[in-house]
Each structure stands twice: as structure tokens, then as C-alpha cells.
Length: 88
Image (cartoon, rainbow, N blue to C red; front, side):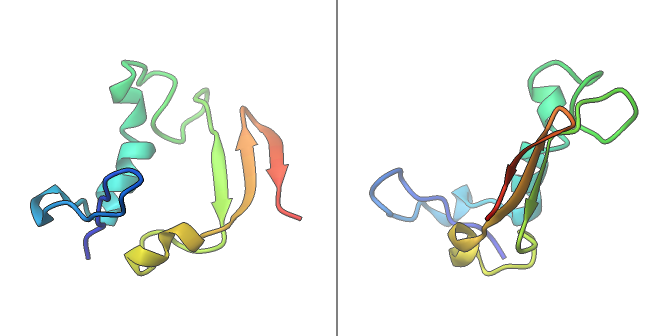
């Protein structure tokens, strides 16, 4: 399965070659963040001494039909070890 990238606001699907697999999208927003920000010593993996911001979702983003990604709900958000959001 591949995720479709849409042109912002238009909803038009870009070419197949520009689609991304769900795991690649997840890695880009998690484990690769430290590298992207030249900050691997503090971000990018769950290790002692590293930042551990976390979002708890109601569905597994890797096992959902791509067009349903927008329907995923946030249950909790933890930032710098502090619960900053909890769904009602």
C-alpha cells in the first residue's frame, strides 16, 4: 500500500512515483527527525536521556486504509514527559 500525496487544498493526487509507503512516512516523523535536525544525540529514538514526545492514536497508522488516515483520532499527547492533551 502506498499513501497518496495531494496538492494542498486541491485534493488532486500526484503521480504514483511521488507516493510514499506508510512506514517511510512514520520514520520521517519519528526515527529520522534527529538526523534531519542534526540532533541525533537528543532526538529520533527512545533511549535514556532523549526527548520522548509521544502521541497516542486510536488506530495503527500502518494498518489503516490510506484514505481513512484523516479519521484517526488523537487520544493523548505527551510532550517532554508531561501530558499536554487528553481526549474528552
